[in-house]
Image 1 (cartoon, rainbow, N blue to C red):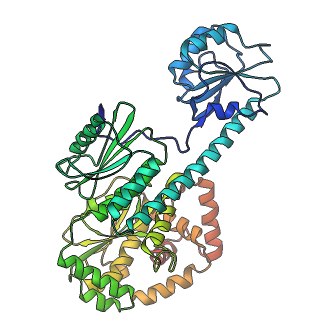
Image 2 (image 1 turned 90 degrees about the vertical axis):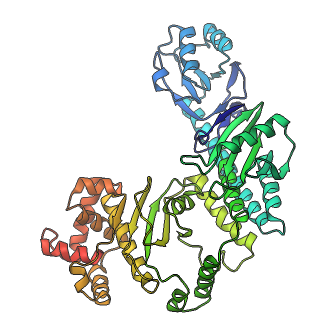
Image 3 (image 1 turned 135 degrees about the vertical axis):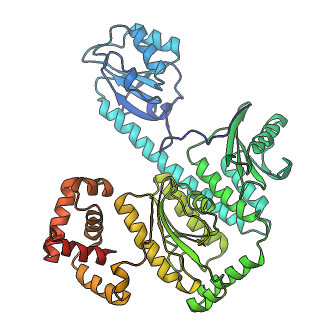
Length: 508
């Protein structure tokens, strides 16, 4: 058994394409001359370099016409060392046939060698690979979405833990077990695995734990099985163990949803303070006034945090909340009214998780999160996140603190600062908030949101074109055009310090 406490290596953004699927395309006329025909292709690369080794990443189909092929054996050696998946050789204009020395060298190294006929351009082969990848990506997206919906449905059944384990095992085609802190199996589903694999899963679960620096997951192998263990909840409780024959790109997302659900289902009962807090939130959702709901909360003071970022995984918001020491977290945007709320648990949760899974497979946008934590809890920068922090506020003043945190987050993103705190006092505190908001709406009415964001970033960076372009991830000429457009629409001289100050207050 091999063990690793780090997460599995990252996978390509789409599933690889089997070489056999490319060979099956009759319109291309490709012919396998050497090596196996079942290797996975991750991408395509064309090169006429005498030694393409420095330009290969591994896993690609390398296409060449042999323009600088002088030593076939050495060439194949270097291509194989670089980790290329297969070699495609184009017949004509340089060679009339694939050199016999090249075929022999590929056969010795077990490197698949394809003959590309004269009528088939390299671009047609590349286009076919990308089309097959797009189809594989769509298939994987559907698989992940369906798996997440089935897991959510299982979580709503009378015996949710065994149901979730069963759904997970079925979707991964392996075994899923719930391991108690002492390593014993408290529940299991899926096909049986050898005793040594079960023992290896228990050892992996033992690697997890709440000790300082303890990992939240661990992976390894036992024979032909891929093993993984995941801590549930805070890490001092049960763990999820998974044994499968292989790991597909979407399996991490599917397992991640199961980890979230099982963490909720196996969490210990919360105390009376949590029940009071949740009751207040329910009353607020059912129409109670904010003041009435706030009266049931701890009077505070509280700190509101707005955050944007994360790594795109289902754990991002939960990990941030855990690192800040709070369970009061709300991912944004929330589901539209009537979309998930008001539906049966399995159906509504399935939709929400399905959308999250779709975003994960297709490339998720940064997460937007709001958090509420006691003012005594320190808030420090977190890698991969922009944080906006309000001033301490009592339960009745939380709406104002929420606006403070939102403004602080906008400044953090505009200045590319990891953490920005609300600055109390100053000139802004001398103006009535309602009057200031009305003035800002009137002043900024001619500007759409992209222009407002550009102007806000430009002002926060003291009129620097280059730094604003970097902050917004656009070309500096785009910044110039937008700022010129702002000046025209507002009919203001943006070189005037007084104008800049007034606009900054309006945008803040």
